[in-house]
Image 1 (cartoon, helix red, strand yellow):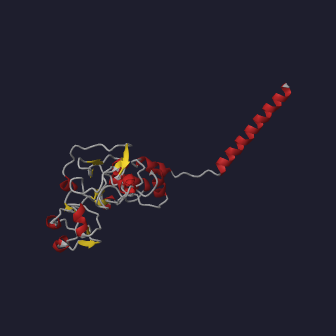
Image 2 (cartoon, rainbow, N blue to C red):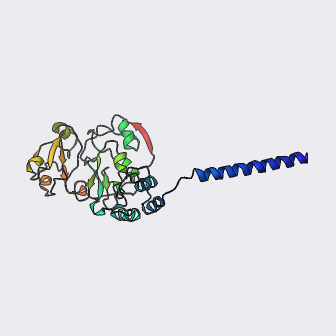
Image 3 (cartoon, rainbow, N blue to C red):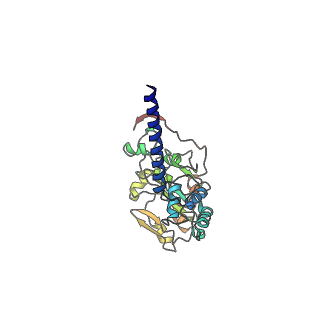
Amino acid sequence: MNNIIFATLISVVFLGAFFGIGLALAARKFKVAVDPRVEGIENVLPGVNCGACGFTGCKKFAQAIALGQTEVDGCTVGGSETADKVAAIMGVDSNSEKTVRQIALVRCQGDRNRARNLSEYRGISSCAGAELVEGGSKGCAYGCLGLGDCVRACPFNAIEINSADLPVVDERLCTGCKKCVAACPRRIISMIEDSSKAHVLCMSEAKGAEVRKVCEVGCISCKRCVKVCPADAIRIEKYLAIIDYDKCRNCGLCIKECPNDVIVRKQEEARGRIQEVKKCFDSPIRGASL
């Protein structure tokens, strides 16, 4: 019996050594060379894995830079400072002076005081959820539902819901990661250059008469802004004023001319300061009726 046990142990040891040597040889033969620059780049990136660069995470972005598949200034969160550090690792010019900071813009002013609700939504506190229930409670099919999906999506706490049920972006904290843009089911959040001053805070493609029925601060496509603009920077598309930021001189004439105060210089001017900011519920289910 002892001889059998001893022989078994010898066999096990022999097999273990055999497979161990085999794995070591295989690892050496099939070893993939790792570019040391990838780790260096990843270390200088913010590490939030927000995806604003177009890749699934900071590591993938770093690998793409090392392979020459993307530019060194592709991290909008890190900005020019990070671009300079990445460029130094890669031994190239960062062109960080060409990097323009972008921030999120909520293009709606239809809060509960100025936009008509057709019904009262009682369900999961989610814009995406409300949108599935006959398009939510708002009379405007393009208006903000105010349930905070953008707030929960922001990894930098740059968005809050104000007392009138509209999201307000803190421009100081916004990094331009675009998470809020993807989270909004009605696509009313856009990315704009920080230097831009005049903004059309409406996304309605309805005719003017229809807009008037449901919102006090919606674009009625009156074209007064188009006529007054000295730079030919505004046009009407689908009953909605569109500003061409490349042409806009930030003169402010369209802001003064707009009869519904749809075009504003700053988001806060249209919505007022953040007052009695209320926290969005994380997962309340308050019944479901519409």
